[in-house]
Image (cartoon, rainbow, N blue to C red):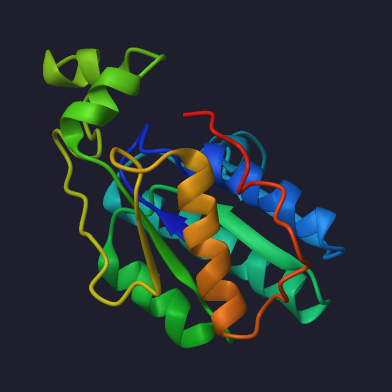
Length: 182
């Protein structure tokens, strides 16, 4: 599962909640979070287009290896370039793209690290959504609008698609449906 969207759009939050729900359903899951991957797997890569693409390809390779061994891989990365995501799609069996969609204004409001403020002031070059492009998916299997849905609603939407496609079974009452945290 590939979660893509603007910084502070909600990818990490949803990935964490989805991971917990799938584990509760008895599935083996590994979450590959963009910030953590940058610290360990892609340390040394910058934010040029080539470096961003290389980061996405590395995570895609890890996700494919995990999937080959029966682990549901949830990658939560900005992955701003459509062509690189489409490349992963063509190489990955059962690829599910989740567009974690939120308005730029909402992402700026949520930004606890202050990165948007720096980028909008011109102090942070190559920032996705401000000084670098974000190319929305054209064929995402799932679209969640995190500025219009609670995290629990977004996770329920993702799970419904995974269930409909036969990737996971409905284990009865979902652990996220009753949550109202936003």
